[in-house]
Image 1 (cartoon, rainbow, N blue to C red):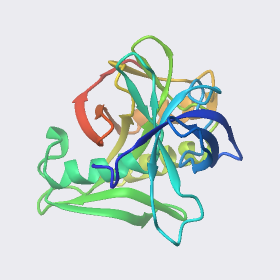
Image 2 (cartoon, one colour):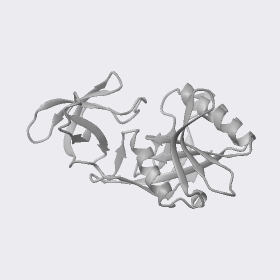
Image 3 (cartoon, rainbow, N blue to C red):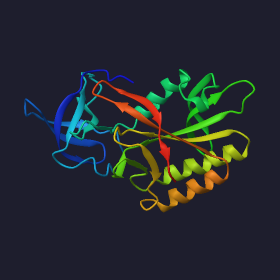
Length: 235
């Protein structure tokens, strides 16, 4: 998934009201407010002074002329903070049949209603195969070197999704929980059950009822975000 415009560097002043981030543009020193497309806690990613990369836009329909896309760890690694990017990235990978475990499916339908007032991120279909329900979560938390974790805050909605996936598995469909790690410094994935014990319990129950788990890393640069190799899952 390519960014639509060239990113510009800035320093974060503060992130507030979940979706707003005050920044100072490098070079000009201009103070601006950027849209932060991330409802999570962003633990470890929103400290004042953090170097970030913003995507400018000239869309008259948007009040904010910048969107926060990346955290630059200034050691060669990036974290993608836009939670809308994983679905866009994964959609392209599914349509290109780049994910071996799901490569047999030719029809990719995003945002299909299912469960109780929910929408599955992707419904995959192919004649002769059980339907595959794929829920996607963006992973940005890392508290130990090389280890990515989910969630970074309590997520009742995430636990609900696991319960609904389990119902699909019991009905004879494939149900897949897919974690996409938007960090280039991680090789392993685990659950942050200490942050949200209910999510951890919901995950274990869903697994016991047949829900599959996939986890992939990402290649992240100032040009865009693409899916990378499978990560080691240690839960």
